[in-house]
Image 1 (cartoon, rainbow, N blue to C red):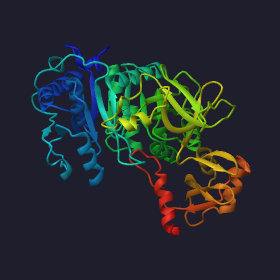
Image 2 (image 1 turned 180 degrees about the vertical axis):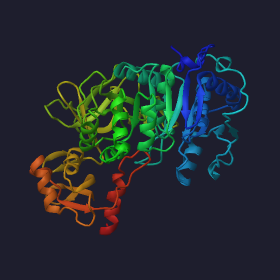
Image 3 (image 1 turned 120 degrees about the horizontal axis):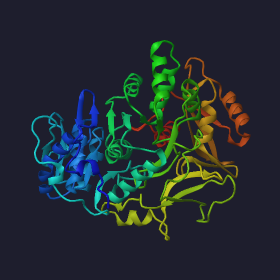
Image 4 (image 1 turned 90 degrees about the horizontal axis):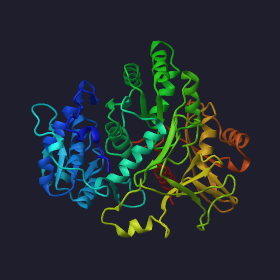
Length: 498
């Protein structure tokens, strides 16, 4: 097996002084990163078990994760914003032998009993990464990443080195990703989007990553205009870019030029509204492309760099990934336009949930396909369009299966709507009714409920119109910009007194 991070495991790592990572003014070459990670290796290996990483958006986090990978020890990235109860569960469940953190990080009580190892990015380094260990086997756990816990306490998804390598190599094929690419992003480093794709992706290719720390249109302009070739983001970030592009003056012109000059603009972690796709394209002439993955599967599909960018779709399956749609009764959803649950299999899949063989078994079908819980349609050319989560985004109303995503896009096409989410709620006549949650563009004069219903009916069809509209100041979102629909519906139940 090719080493997971070949450029860092060579005795000549970064001999030409190539930059590996940059956080603000702090830049680490491949040689420096290899030396820093290598100096941590013996301490990590000697801890005697998996290692937690206090995953701030910093060079210390990158050094810590790379050190664990080079030492062959599973890393457990911890979200610094996790609440006390959930963090205590994750720490208790993963039982880390030590926690790696920056010297200035203040750790919460949940980690008080875990031995701490400070990660230093200045001063002298110890032995190089090549001195630490050989390449572990492909099934060795690389990372244990905890799921969001929407259906219970978070579960630790074990990601083997095989899955990380397979996903990153499939993206190399799809996106023409090379060592000459400079990736720009501001994604959190406790999740697969920011950590696996956003850090390990460039390091596997021998390229570089510039992390903005905190997202801003100005930071994107600066880094793309000074050599960045790729931008990764979530829909919230691209929405802010679309808004900034509408501003008059030098800043908007500079941002448009920087985005137009990038080789690849990629959005993920949630669907990018078609409205924002079109606004960015109109201002820059460039299309944002999307891909689809999840913690347990890493990447499943992606629009190719040399393919047809089709707003609202996440492209065809990546190399090595098999994908099928399944009806509720388990039969194949093969009719034109059919909506079904996405099931996948391939080398990109996780090994299972840590300590949860029951949950692992339940996640797979009898014939070995992983149940994603996402619902979609597949076009004749293989392009996948995500409808949403089976539990929250598939609405069964009046005998129809309705995907929340297309209604959300229709609502966002109305000039009076700034943000929108769609859910279903029980209805004695229809089974479920379509409910819209809208953040108006002008709070003092929001579009009326009937106006929005007619707008959706005209663009889509009458049975897809919202029967109820709630007006909000903002939609609840998580750290990756995903709308937390369970929070919306739970709030509505409390208001009704259910």
